[in-house]
Image (cartoon, rainbow, N blue to C red; front, side, top):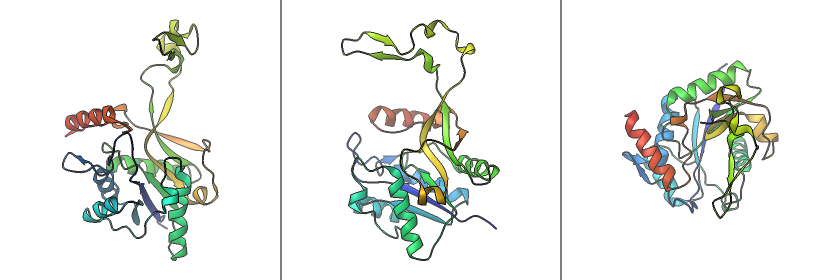
Length: 231
């Protein structure tokens, strides 16, 4: 039986570092239109839901062809709300309306470099593990994490692991970090899980050029340049 999948795109209206980033124009459409279209083209999802408390974002989503069945409560839309309660609210609300899902895809609104093939590969990896582990999009650090420094206010650098800078990169293991683009969850993890659980994931490796997490103006400019190169 084909799994019942829902894609949830969190898109609250309170971004402070980059106001209106979810609906700001990006190469011919509102930013979140790119990940919405990738979700639709993948053919994976029975439901694509934009989770927002903002009327303008709802209107943009609906103008793009993605009706918003219900709004997110303002209590789940402040700067400190973790993402898991937001996902659970959506799943619970649909359950109360008689609509259940097996898998939940968290797709980030500002991930314009992700395409349908990435989501399909993530779903295939999810199925390979029998749907028992969440699949997180990851990419490799450009240099070994052992070479990291902290920087004091006066500009002086302090090595996080003194002496490791002298170790060749090829002699150190490759490390990965979450891209902030998408994660696929078993629905039970949403219904039973708590925020901050960083265990029981499988990593789907993305190239670094697809892995821009847009939080500020510099991120936006980088995403624009990468998008232009990929067109």
